[in-house]
Image 1: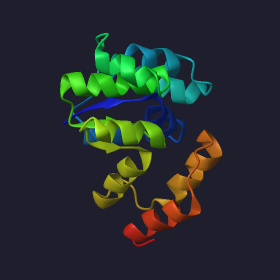
Image 2 (image 1 turned 45 degrees about the vertical axis):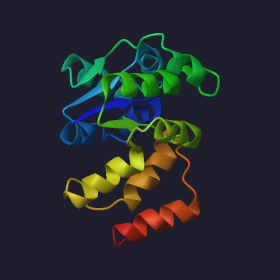
Image 3 (image 1 turned 60 degrees about the vertical axis):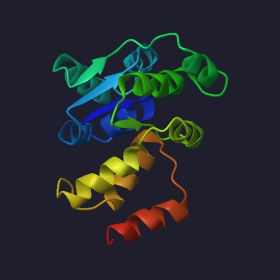
Length: 163
């Protein structure tokens, strides 16, 4: 299964040492140039190292996005990384686009793309036994990646996993 990712899911998973979960869930993860640029400026050297290793191993791959009407429209509403990720996912007919931000998720859904984010990746990892609990992962996301999750969404996720 092929995915296209925005910066935040990769950055957040790398920050908590869980970037490898993407490798087990997707055959490849494509990223547009705006995301490559954003990831190269990651402030955590350990997370940056995980990202660079994944790119050297080529399961995270840079990919060019065309200057399409869809991209131009998305750039009116989103940051470049999100806009390029959605446009690339549409062009490549990706199975999934990885985005955490609500507005980007909504626009990707409107573009008929399947969307998931960090929490979806963690949910799948819990269901397949790759991680034993989601609550510690959410705590790590908050402390290491400054990830925001509302109390109601956290409760919903924990309930879905029986935690």
